[in-house]
Length: 489
Image (cartoon, rainbow, N blue to C red; front, side, top):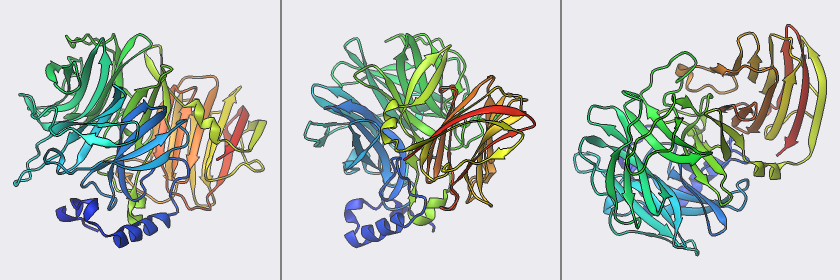
Protein backbone atom coordinates (compact mmCIF):
# COMPACT_ATOMS: atom_id res chain seq x y z
CA UNK A 1 0.00 0.00 0.00
CA UNK A 2 1.27 3.44 -0.94
CA UNK A 3 0.59 5.98 1.76
CA UNK A 4 -0.28 9.50 0.68
CA UNK A 5 0.94 12.54 2.59
CA UNK A 6 -2.61 13.16 3.77
CA UNK A 7 -2.85 9.63 5.18
CA UNK A 8 0.51 9.91 6.93
CA UNK A 9 -0.41 13.18 8.63
CA UNK A 10 -3.91 12.33 9.84
CA UNK A 11 -4.17 12.91 13.57
CA UNK A 12 -5.21 10.07 15.82
CA UNK A 13 -7.97 12.24 17.26
CA UNK A 14 -9.74 12.39 13.88
CA UNK A 15 -9.85 8.61 13.38
CA UNK A 16 -12.99 6.67 14.20
CA UNK A 17 -13.03 4.07 16.97
CA UNK A 18 -14.21 1.52 14.40
CA UNK A 19 -11.11 2.04 12.26
CA UNK A 20 -8.82 1.81 15.29
CA UNK A 21 -10.53 -1.39 16.47
CA UNK A 22 -10.16 -2.98 13.05
CA UNK A 23 -6.48 -2.07 12.92
CA UNK A 24 -5.90 -3.45 16.43
CA UNK A 25 -7.62 -6.71 15.48
CA UNK A 26 -5.40 -7.00 12.40
CA UNK A 27 -2.27 -6.40 14.49
CA UNK A 28 -3.31 -8.94 17.13
CA UNK A 29 -3.68 -11.68 14.50
CA UNK A 30 0.00 -11.39 13.55
CA UNK A 31 2.05 -14.49 14.45
CA UNK A 32 5.13 -12.34 15.10
CA UNK A 33 3.77 -10.27 17.98
CA UNK A 34 6.37 -10.22 20.74
CA UNK A 35 5.82 -11.66 24.20
CA UNK A 36 8.25 -9.67 26.39
CA UNK A 37 9.54 -6.76 24.29
CA UNK A 38 7.97 -3.31 24.16
CA UNK A 39 6.01 -3.04 20.90
CA UNK A 40 3.31 -0.72 19.56
CA UNK A 41 -0.35 -1.57 20.11
CA UNK A 42 -0.81 -0.54 16.46
CA UNK A 43 1.25 1.20 13.82
CA UNK A 44 4.94 2.05 13.91
CA UNK A 45 7.30 2.38 16.86
CA UNK A 46 10.74 3.89 16.49
CA UNK A 47 13.22 5.78 18.70
CA UNK A 48 13.11 5.30 22.49
CA UNK A 49 12.62 8.68 24.19
CA UNK A 50 12.44 10.17 27.67
CA UNK A 51 14.09 7.15 29.34
CA UNK A 52 14.23 8.10 33.02
CA UNK A 53 13.46 7.27 36.65
CA UNK A 54 10.81 9.40 38.32
CA UNK A 55 8.43 9.02 41.26
CA UNK A 56 9.62 5.49 42.04
CA UNK A 57 9.20 4.13 38.51
CA UNK A 58 11.08 3.83 35.24
CA UNK A 59 9.55 5.77 32.38
CA UNK A 60 10.14 5.15 28.71
CA UNK A 61 8.46 6.78 25.75
CA UNK A 62 8.81 5.95 22.09
CA UNK A 63 8.07 7.70 18.84
CA UNK A 64 4.79 6.37 17.52
CA UNK A 65 2.70 6.63 14.37
CA UNK A 66 -0.48 4.80 15.40
CA UNK A 67 -2.24 4.35 12.05
CA UNK A 68 0.12 2.07 10.15
CA UNK A 69 3.65 0.71 9.67
CA UNK A 70 5.02 3.91 8.12
CA UNK A 71 6.60 7.15 9.31
CA UNK A 72 3.93 9.81 9.62
CA UNK A 73 2.55 12.17 12.25
CA UNK A 74 4.56 11.14 15.31
CA UNK A 75 3.33 11.01 18.89
CA UNK A 76 5.18 9.99 22.05
CA UNK A 77 3.74 6.84 23.60
CA UNK A 78 4.32 6.33 27.35
CA UNK A 79 5.41 3.10 29.08
CA UNK A 80 6.34 2.64 32.74
CA UNK A 81 7.84 -0.09 34.89
CA UNK A 82 8.80 -0.73 38.49
CA UNK A 83 11.59 -3.17 37.60
CA UNK A 84 12.72 -2.71 33.95
CA UNK A 85 11.45 -6.21 33.13
CA UNK A 86 7.66 -5.83 32.98
CA UNK A 87 6.29 -2.73 31.28
CA UNK A 88 2.84 -1.18 31.45
CA UNK A 89 1.14 0.71 28.63
CA UNK A 90 0.21 4.15 29.96
CA UNK A 91 -1.02 5.71 26.72
CA UNK A 92 -0.25 8.71 24.56
CA UNK A 93 2.33 10.94 26.24
CA UNK A 94 2.87 13.88 23.89
CA UNK A 95 0.51 14.83 21.08
CA UNK A 96 1.58 16.92 18.06
CA UNK A 97 -1.10 19.56 18.50
CA UNK A 98 0.71 22.93 18.60
CA UNK A 99 2.26 25.21 15.99
CA UNK A 100 5.74 24.10 17.05
CA UNK A 101 5.09 20.33 16.63
CA UNK A 102 2.36 20.35 13.99
CA UNK A 103 4.01 17.61 11.90
CA UNK A 104 5.26 15.41 14.69
CA UNK A 105 6.74 15.13 18.17
CA UNK A 106 10.20 13.85 17.35
CA UNK A 107 12.85 12.35 19.61
CA UNK A 108 14.13 13.69 22.90
CA UNK A 109 14.85 12.89 26.53
CA UNK A 110 13.70 13.22 30.12
CA UNK A 111 15.21 14.54 33.37
CA UNK A 112 13.79 14.88 36.89
CA UNK A 113 13.85 18.35 38.43
CA UNK A 114 11.79 20.06 41.14
CA UNK A 115 9.58 16.99 41.63
CA UNK A 116 8.62 16.91 37.96
CA UNK A 117 9.79 14.85 35.00
CA UNK A 118 10.83 17.32 32.32
CA UNK A 119 10.59 16.07 28.75
CA UNK A 120 12.49 17.63 25.85
CA UNK A 121 11.75 16.85 22.22
CA UNK A 122 12.03 18.16 18.69
CA UNK A 123 8.87 19.63 17.24
CA UNK A 124 8.72 18.87 13.53
CA UNK A 125 6.88 21.40 11.37
CA UNK A 126 6.48 21.94 7.64
CA UNK A 127 5.48 25.11 5.80
CA UNK A 128 3.25 25.39 2.73
CA UNK A 129 6.21 24.43 0.53
CA UNK A 130 6.90 21.39 2.72
CA UNK A 131 10.12 22.93 4.03
CA UNK A 132 11.06 21.65 7.49
CA UNK A 133 11.34 24.02 10.45
CA UNK A 134 12.46 22.22 13.63
CA UNK A 135 11.82 23.54 17.14
CA UNK A 136 13.22 22.21 20.41
CA UNK A 137 10.34 21.88 22.83
CA UNK A 138 9.64 21.13 26.50
CA UNK A 139 6.88 19.49 28.51
CA UNK A 140 6.69 18.23 32.08
CA UNK A 141 4.88 15.45 33.92
CA UNK A 142 3.70 15.69 37.52
CA UNK A 143 3.37 12.86 40.03
CA UNK A 144 -0.23 12.26 38.92
CA UNK A 145 1.05 11.49 35.42
CA UNK A 146 -0.39 14.63 33.83
CA UNK A 147 1.81 16.03 31.05
CA UNK A 148 1.78 19.77 30.30
CA UNK A 149 3.52 21.42 27.36
CA UNK A 150 5.36 24.72 27.52
CA UNK A 151 3.50 27.26 25.39
CA UNK A 152 6.55 28.10 23.31
CA UNK A 153 9.69 26.36 22.06
CA UNK A 154 12.77 26.56 24.25
CA UNK A 155 14.98 26.83 21.14
CA UNK A 156 13.13 28.40 18.23
CA UNK A 157 15.71 28.45 15.46
CA UNK A 158 18.59 26.48 13.95
CA UNK A 159 21.97 28.06 14.71
CA UNK A 160 23.92 29.61 11.87
CA UNK A 161 25.98 27.15 9.84
CA UNK A 162 23.59 24.19 10.14
CA UNK A 163 20.70 22.81 8.09
CA UNK A 164 17.15 22.00 9.18
CA UNK A 165 18.36 18.53 10.21
CA UNK A 166 18.59 19.64 13.83
CA UNK A 167 16.94 17.37 16.37
CA UNK A 168 16.88 14.89 19.29
CA UNK A 169 17.86 16.89 22.43
CA UNK A 170 19.38 14.83 25.24
CA UNK A 171 19.51 16.77 28.53
CA UNK A 172 21.69 16.18 31.58
CA UNK A 173 22.78 18.10 34.68
CA UNK A 174 26.34 18.99 35.65
CA UNK A 175 27.44 21.32 38.48
CA UNK A 176 24.12 23.15 38.83
CA UNK A 177 23.80 23.72 35.09
CA UNK A 178 21.78 21.80 32.53
CA UNK A 179 23.16 20.84 29.14
CA UNK A 180 21.39 19.70 25.98
CA UNK A 181 23.24 17.90 23.19
CA UNK A 182 21.47 18.01 19.83
CA UNK A 183 22.13 16.14 16.58
CA UNK A 184 22.89 18.33 13.60
CA UNK A 185 23.98 18.58 10.01
CA UNK A 186 26.42 21.27 8.95
CA UNK A 187 25.69 23.28 5.81
CA UNK A 188 28.45 21.30 4.08
CA UNK A 189 26.31 18.16 4.65
CA UNK A 190 28.43 16.58 7.38
CA UNK A 191 27.26 15.41 10.81
CA UNK A 192 27.94 17.08 14.16
CA UNK A 193 26.55 17.57 17.66
CA UNK A 194 25.78 20.92 19.29
CA UNK A 195 25.49 21.77 22.99
CA UNK A 196 23.26 24.32 24.76
CA UNK A 197 23.34 25.37 28.40
CA UNK A 198 20.62 26.43 30.85
CA UNK A 199 20.35 27.29 34.53
CA UNK A 200 16.61 26.71 34.79
CA UNK A 201 15.58 24.37 31.89
CA UNK A 202 13.60 27.19 30.30
CA UNK A 203 16.17 29.64 28.92
CA UNK A 204 18.86 28.00 26.77
CA UNK A 205 22.05 29.48 25.36
CA UNK A 206 24.20 28.06 22.57
CA UNK A 207 27.67 26.94 23.66
CA UNK A 208 28.75 25.55 20.30
CA UNK A 209 29.78 22.34 18.61
CA UNK A 210 31.59 19.48 20.31
CA UNK A 211 34.99 19.29 18.63
CA UNK A 212 35.69 15.66 17.82
CA UNK A 213 38.36 13.85 15.84
CA UNK A 214 35.68 12.53 13.44
CA UNK A 215 35.82 14.69 10.34
CA UNK A 216 33.45 14.02 7.42
CA UNK A 217 31.98 11.10 9.36
CA UNK A 218 28.59 10.74 7.71
CA UNK A 219 26.08 13.39 6.67
CA UNK A 220 23.93 13.51 9.85
CA UNK A 221 24.38 12.51 13.49
CA UNK A 222 21.07 11.48 15.03
CA UNK A 223 20.06 10.76 18.64
CA UNK A 224 23.20 11.96 20.45
CA UNK A 225 23.76 11.06 24.09
CA UNK A 226 26.58 12.12 26.38
CA UNK A 227 27.33 10.71 29.84
CA UNK A 228 30.19 10.15 32.26
CA UNK A 229 30.84 6.54 33.25
CA UNK A 230 33.60 5.15 35.43
CA UNK A 231 35.56 8.39 35.17
CA UNK A 232 35.39 8.61 31.37
CA UNK A 233 33.23 10.57 28.96
CA UNK A 234 31.09 8.68 26.46
CA UNK A 235 29.56 10.27 23.37
CA UNK A 236 26.97 8.06 21.71
CA UNK A 237 25.27 8.88 18.41
CA UNK A 238 23.81 7.39 15.23
CA UNK A 239 25.69 8.61 12.16
CA UNK A 240 24.03 8.34 8.78
CA UNK A 241 26.00 7.96 5.57
CA UNK A 242 28.92 5.72 6.57
CA UNK A 243 30.27 3.37 3.91
CA UNK A 244 30.75 -0.34 4.76
CA UNK A 245 34.29 -1.18 5.88
CA UNK A 246 35.19 -4.85 6.33
CA UNK A 247 32.76 -6.30 8.86
CA UNK A 248 31.78 -2.83 10.09
CA UNK A 249 29.00 -0.46 9.02
CA UNK A 250 26.98 -3.10 7.17
CA UNK A 251 23.50 -1.77 8.01
CA UNK A 252 21.75 1.09 6.25
CA UNK A 253 22.59 3.33 9.25
CA UNK A 254 24.80 2.77 12.29
CA UNK A 255 24.82 3.47 16.02
CA UNK A 256 27.99 3.71 18.07
CA UNK A 257 30.12 5.63 20.51
CA UNK A 258 33.49 7.11 21.33
CA UNK A 259 35.11 7.01 24.78
CA UNK A 260 37.52 9.62 26.05
CA UNK A 261 38.25 12.12 28.76
CA UNK A 262 35.25 13.83 30.28
CA UNK A 263 33.76 16.50 28.03
CA UNK A 264 35.08 19.87 29.20
CA UNK A 265 32.15 22.11 30.09
CA UNK A 266 31.42 24.72 29.00
CA UNK A 267 34.49 24.74 26.70
CA UNK A 268 33.35 21.57 24.81
CA UNK A 269 36.89 20.22 24.38
CA UNK A 270 36.72 16.44 24.02
CA UNK A 271 39.58 13.99 23.44
CA UNK A 272 38.44 10.50 22.55
CA UNK A 273 39.26 7.18 20.90
CA UNK A 274 37.93 5.49 17.77
CA UNK A 275 34.24 5.16 16.91
CA UNK A 276 32.89 1.72 17.85
CA UNK A 277 29.59 0.21 16.79
CA UNK A 278 27.31 -0.59 19.71
CA UNK A 279 25.68 -3.61 18.13
CA UNK A 280 27.09 -5.92 15.47
CA UNK A 281 23.77 -7.39 14.39
CA UNK A 282 21.15 -6.32 11.86
CA UNK A 283 18.49 -4.27 13.65
CA UNK A 284 19.65 -1.73 16.21
CA UNK A 285 19.41 2.06 16.05
CA UNK A 286 18.82 5.30 17.97
CA UNK A 287 19.68 4.08 21.49
CA UNK A 288 19.14 6.20 24.59
CA UNK A 289 20.62 5.86 28.08
CA UNK A 290 19.68 6.85 31.62
CA UNK A 291 21.21 6.62 35.08
CA UNK A 292 19.19 5.03 37.88
CA UNK A 293 19.27 6.19 41.53
CA UNK A 294 21.94 3.57 42.31
CA UNK A 295 24.24 4.97 39.62
CA UNK A 296 23.76 2.21 37.07
CA UNK A 297 23.74 3.29 33.42
CA UNK A 298 21.01 1.64 31.28
CA UNK A 299 20.44 1.70 27.53
CA UNK A 300 17.48 0.82 25.32
CA UNK A 301 17.61 0.75 21.52
CA UNK A 302 15.14 0.71 18.67
CA UNK A 303 15.10 -2.84 17.29
CA UNK A 304 14.63 -1.65 13.74
CA UNK A 305 16.01 0.70 11.12
CA UNK A 306 14.65 3.55 9.01
CA UNK A 307 13.81 2.98 5.36
CA UNK A 308 13.57 -0.82 5.69
CA UNK A 309 10.36 -2.78 5.00
CA UNK A 310 9.67 -5.44 7.65
CA UNK A 311 7.38 -8.49 7.30
CA UNK A 312 5.03 -7.25 10.03
CA UNK A 313 4.17 -4.25 7.84
CA UNK A 314 1.49 -6.37 6.17
CA UNK A 315 -0.18 -6.77 9.57
CA UNK A 316 -0.38 -3.06 10.37
CA UNK A 317 2.55 -2.68 12.76
CA UNK A 318 6.34 -2.39 12.81
CA UNK A 319 9.25 -2.61 15.24
CA UNK A 320 9.94 -3.03 18.95
CA UNK A 321 12.52 -1.98 21.54
CA UNK A 322 15.43 -4.00 22.90
CA UNK A 323 15.52 -5.34 26.43
CA UNK A 324 17.20 -2.78 28.72
CA UNK A 325 20.96 -3.21 28.88
CA UNK A 326 23.38 -2.17 31.61
CA UNK A 327 26.53 -0.39 30.44
CA UNK A 328 29.98 -0.57 32.00
CA UNK A 329 33.44 0.34 30.69
CA UNK A 330 36.39 -2.02 30.45
CA UNK A 331 39.65 -1.11 28.72
CA UNK A 332 38.03 1.84 26.97
CA UNK A 333 35.15 -0.23 25.60
CA UNK A 334 31.49 -0.28 26.54
CA UNK A 335 30.22 -3.63 27.75
CA UNK A 336 26.50 -4.35 27.41
CA UNK A 337 24.66 -6.89 29.53
CA UNK A 338 20.92 -7.45 29.92
CA UNK A 339 19.73 -5.86 33.15
CA UNK A 340 19.73 -8.35 36.01
CA UNK A 341 16.05 -7.62 36.59
CA UNK A 342 15.21 -9.68 33.48
CA UNK A 343 15.77 -12.75 35.67
CA UNK A 344 12.35 -12.05 37.20
CA UNK A 345 10.80 -13.36 33.98
CA UNK A 346 12.45 -16.77 34.27
CA UNK A 347 10.21 -19.79 34.74
CA UNK A 348 11.26 -23.43 34.88
CA UNK A 349 14.69 -24.23 33.48
CA UNK A 350 16.74 -27.04 31.97
CA UNK A 351 20.51 -27.55 32.17
CA UNK A 352 23.04 -29.34 29.95
CA UNK A 353 26.63 -30.41 30.53
CA UNK A 354 28.07 -32.38 27.64
CA UNK A 355 30.97 -32.87 25.24
CA UNK A 356 30.15 -32.46 21.58
CA UNK A 357 32.49 -33.85 18.96
CA UNK A 358 32.05 -32.98 15.28
CA UNK A 359 28.29 -33.31 15.59
CA UNK A 360 24.91 -31.57 15.78
CA UNK A 361 23.00 -32.42 18.99
CA UNK A 362 19.54 -31.77 20.36
CA UNK A 363 18.35 -32.23 23.93
CA UNK A 364 15.02 -33.06 25.55
CA UNK A 365 12.86 -30.01 26.28
CA UNK A 366 15.34 -27.64 24.64
CA UNK A 367 13.01 -25.86 22.25
CA UNK A 368 10.65 -22.90 22.16
CA UNK A 369 9.78 -19.52 20.67
CA UNK A 370 10.26 -17.32 23.77
CA UNK A 371 13.07 -18.00 26.22
CA UNK A 372 16.37 -16.97 27.74
CA UNK A 373 19.37 -19.16 26.97
CA UNK A 374 22.87 -19.15 28.41
CA UNK A 375 25.47 -21.43 26.88
CA UNK A 376 29.24 -21.66 27.05
CA UNK A 377 31.74 -23.50 24.88
CA UNK A 378 35.25 -24.20 26.15
CA UNK A 379 38.06 -26.73 25.70
CA UNK A 380 37.53 -25.93 22.04
CA UNK A 381 39.48 -27.91 19.45
CA UNK A 382 36.71 -27.57 16.84
CA UNK A 383 36.91 -25.14 13.94
CA UNK A 384 33.43 -23.88 14.74
CA UNK A 385 30.97 -24.17 17.63
CA UNK A 386 27.52 -22.73 17.94
CA UNK A 387 23.76 -22.81 18.34
CA UNK A 388 20.91 -23.17 15.85
CA UNK A 389 17.75 -21.39 17.05
CA UNK A 390 14.11 -21.27 15.93
CA UNK A 391 14.81 -24.19 13.64
CA UNK A 392 12.71 -26.70 11.70
CA UNK A 393 13.33 -28.70 8.53
CA UNK A 394 13.22 -25.50 6.49
CA UNK A 395 14.25 -22.69 8.85
CA UNK A 396 17.16 -21.93 11.14
CA UNK A 397 18.99 -19.03 12.75
CA UNK A 398 22.68 -19.71 13.38
CA UNK A 399 24.93 -18.08 15.97
CA UNK A 400 28.45 -19.44 16.06
CA UNK A 401 32.06 -18.87 16.93
CA UNK A 402 34.51 -19.40 14.08
CA UNK A 403 37.62 -20.30 16.08
CA UNK A 404 39.90 -20.42 13.04
CA UNK A 405 39.09 -16.85 12.02
CA UNK A 406 38.35 -15.64 15.57
CA UNK A 407 34.93 -14.29 14.64
CA UNK A 408 31.42 -14.42 16.02
CA UNK A 409 28.95 -15.01 13.19
CA UNK A 410 25.17 -14.38 13.09
CA UNK A 411 23.48 -15.96 10.06
CA UNK A 412 19.79 -15.28 9.37
CA UNK A 413 19.82 -16.37 5.72
CA UNK A 414 17.28 -19.12 6.52
CA UNK A 415 15.55 -17.51 9.48
CA UNK A 416 12.11 -17.28 7.85
CA UNK A 417 10.46 -14.58 5.79
CA UNK A 418 13.07 -12.56 3.91
CA UNK A 419 13.62 -8.82 4.17
CA UNK A 420 16.44 -6.26 3.81
CA UNK A 421 18.42 -8.78 1.74
CA UNK A 422 20.26 -5.99 -0.06
CA UNK A 423 22.18 -5.33 3.17
CA UNK A 424 23.27 -8.94 3.58
CA UNK A 425 22.11 -11.86 5.71
CA UNK A 426 25.26 -12.49 7.75
CA UNK A 427 26.91 -10.29 10.38
CA UNK A 428 30.25 -11.02 12.01
CA UNK A 429 32.84 -9.38 14.21
CA UNK A 430 36.21 -10.19 15.74
CA UNK A 431 36.45 -12.05 19.04
CA UNK A 432 39.54 -13.73 20.45
CA UNK A 433 38.63 -16.09 23.29
CA UNK A 434 39.38 -19.54 24.63
CA UNK A 435 35.91 -19.76 26.17
CA UNK A 436 32.87 -18.36 24.36
CA UNK A 437 29.73 -17.49 26.33
CA UNK A 438 26.43 -16.70 24.61
CA UNK A 439 23.60 -15.09 26.60
CA UNK A 440 20.56 -15.06 24.31
CA UNK A 441 17.02 -13.67 24.50
CA UNK A 442 14.66 -15.18 21.95
CA UNK A 443 11.21 -13.72 21.35
CA UNK A 444 8.66 -14.52 18.65
CA UNK A 445 10.36 -12.27 16.10
CA UNK A 446 13.72 -11.28 17.53
CA UNK A 447 17.03 -12.54 18.88
CA UNK A 448 19.39 -10.56 21.14
CA UNK A 449 22.82 -12.05 21.81
CA UNK A 450 25.35 -10.92 24.43
CA UNK A 451 28.75 -12.55 24.02
CA UNK A 452 31.45 -12.96 26.69
CA UNK A 453 29.81 -10.84 29.36
CA UNK A 454 28.79 -8.09 26.98
CA UNK A 455 32.01 -7.70 25.00
CA UNK A 456 29.90 -8.09 21.84
CA UNK A 457 26.16 -7.55 21.32
CA UNK A 458 24.22 -8.69 18.23
CA UNK A 459 20.54 -7.91 17.66
CA UNK A 460 18.24 -9.12 14.90
CA UNK A 461 14.61 -9.33 13.93
CA UNK A 462 13.71 -12.72 12.48
CA UNK A 463 10.36 -13.90 11.11
CA UNK A 464 10.14 -17.70 11.28
CA UNK A 465 7.05 -19.88 11.16
CA UNK A 466 5.49 -20.29 14.62
CA UNK A 467 6.28 -24.03 14.47
CA UNK A 468 10.04 -23.40 14.09
CA UNK A 469 10.98 -23.96 17.72
CA UNK A 470 13.99 -26.27 17.66
CA UNK A 471 17.37 -25.65 19.32
CA UNK A 472 20.54 -27.46 18.28
CA UNK A 473 24.15 -27.25 19.41
CA UNK A 474 27.08 -28.13 17.18
CA UNK A 475 30.81 -28.45 16.77
CA UNK A 476 32.54 -28.80 13.41
CA UNK A 477 35.84 -30.63 12.92
CA UNK A 478 36.64 -31.12 16.58
CA UNK A 479 35.44 -31.09 20.17
CA UNK A 480 34.08 -28.66 22.70
CA UNK A 481 32.61 -28.84 26.17
CA UNK A 482 29.09 -27.41 26.32
CA UNK A 483 27.29 -25.96 29.31
CA UNK A 484 23.80 -24.58 28.77
CA UNK A 485 20.81 -23.36 30.77
CA UNK A 486 17.44 -22.47 29.23
CA UNK A 487 14.66 -20.61 31.02
CA UNK A 488 11.13 -20.48 29.69
CA UNK A 489 9.56 -17.02 29.41
